[in-house]
Image (cartoon, rainbow, N blue to C red; front, side, top):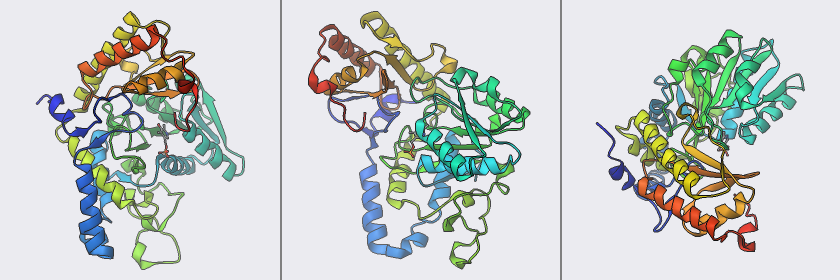
Length: 398
Ligand SMILES: *Cc1c(COP(=O)(O)O)cnc(C)c1O
C-alpha cells in the first residue's frame, strides 16, 4: 500500500510556522513521545523501581529495538543492538574489525567522513601503539584506494556535508576481494534510504537514531555485526552488560552470545522510550518509497533554487543514485544566510566552510514546505537581508 504521507506528517509535532529541513541533524518529536516518556518515568521507574529491569523489559529492550531498527537497514534478525553514542560504536566496530585482520595496519577512510569517526580512528591508532595508520582519500577515490595493505574500510555511506552517497555493495565487494573488512556508518542512511546490509555483505555497521529515526537529542546509537562474525568479533569495550552472564559477577570477561557482546553498560532507558515511540511511525513504511519521495522533494528544491536564487552552487551530486536525503549548496556567506533563513522559520543548518544543508524527510516535509522554503530563500538573497551583524555571530552549535 502506498504511504499516506499526509497521515504520517500528522504523527509529528512541528512548531507553528516552522519548515523543518534539518531532520538530518536532529529529527523532530513524534506526538506520542511525551506520553511514552511519562509512562516510563511514572509507572516504570516511579512504581517498579529496580524491578523495572525485569518487569518492564528494560534489559531486553536494546536487542528488541535493535530488531526493529534492523528491519529498516536490511539486517538479519538478532544482529543489531542499541546503546551508547555513535562515536563509541564507531570505535567499537573499528577495534573489532582491526583484530580480525591482524596482519594489516591501514584504516582507509575518506575526507568527507564525519570528523568524529576520523578522530576515533586516530585515537585508536595511538592506543594501539602507533603501528596503525589512518589513511584518508577523496570520496571518489575510496574504492580504488583499497589494496592488500588495507585492514579496514571505514566509510559513512552518505557524506554529511555534500550528501554524496557511496555504493555500499560495490565497495564492500572490493574490500572483501582485497581481504579487508568494512565498517559502514549509516548516520545519514538509516531512516533515509533503503539499506541492505545483508545483501551488501557488510561486516560491521553503526549509526545513530536521533537524526532520521527521531529518538531525540542524545538518543542511543546502534551497531550491526554480520552473523558470520557474530561469535568471532571481540568487543574492545568489554563492559559488564556485554558479558555472557552479567549477574554471575565473574572476575573474568567472557563475551555474550552474538550481538549481545556489543553492549557496554547500562542502557539509557528513558531515551529508549522515545525511540520506541518514534519507531511506530515506520510500521508499514517502504524505505524505497520514502527515498523516492525525498528525491522528488530534493529535485523540486534544486530546480527552484537554481531558477530563482543567485550565487548558490550545488554541492550535492545530481545523479539520484549518488544521493541520500539532503541537498547542500555552497555560498561564501552560507553561515549568515542560514541564520537569516532560520529567523524566518526555515530551519536547515550550516557546515563549515561554506555549506548550507537542507534535509528532505518526506514523513513530515511536503511540496508546500519546499515551495515556501525556496521563496523565502530567494527573498533573503534578493534583498540581502542576511547581511546583518546578528546573522554573522557564530553560535556554539551551527
Ligand atoms: C552525526 C554523526 C556522528 C555523531 O556521533 P555522536 O557520537 O552521536 O555524537 C558521528 N558520525 C557521523 C557520520 C555522523 O553523521
